[in-house]
Length: 140
Image (cartoon, rainbow, N blue to C red):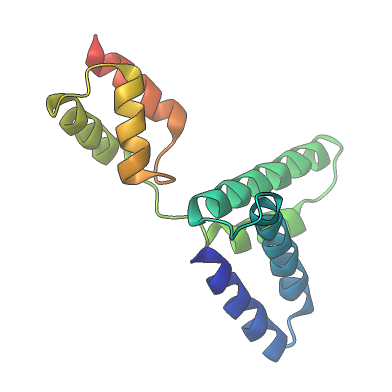
C-alpha cells in the first residue's frame, strides 16, 4: 500500500535527519489518512493516489502564482518530485489506445461502459481527459 511506503520513507528520512522530507511526507500521509478516517476505515490505494494527485496539482498552482509574481518556486517543484514517486506509472497514449480498443472489441459499446471497465482494470494509471477523448474518437 502507498501509505505503508510513505511511512517507511518517513522513517528513513528521520534516520537520515532530513527534516524537510519528513515534514512533507508527514503532511501527505496525514492528508491521505483523513480520507479513510472520514469513512471510518483505512484509505484505499486508489484514494491515496487521488490525494497525491490533488496535492501535486495544488503545488503546481502555487508555483504558477509564484512565477507570475516573479518569485522562485524551487521548493514547490522539489516537493512535487517527492510526491510523484507515489503515483503509478501512467499509460502512454499508445498503450491507452490499445487498452480502450480492446475494451470496445470486448463489448463495451458506450462511453460509460468503456470508462467503467478502464477504471476497474487500470485505475489511476491514465489521464482521464485523454481516455475520454480516445474513447469518443473510437466509438464514432
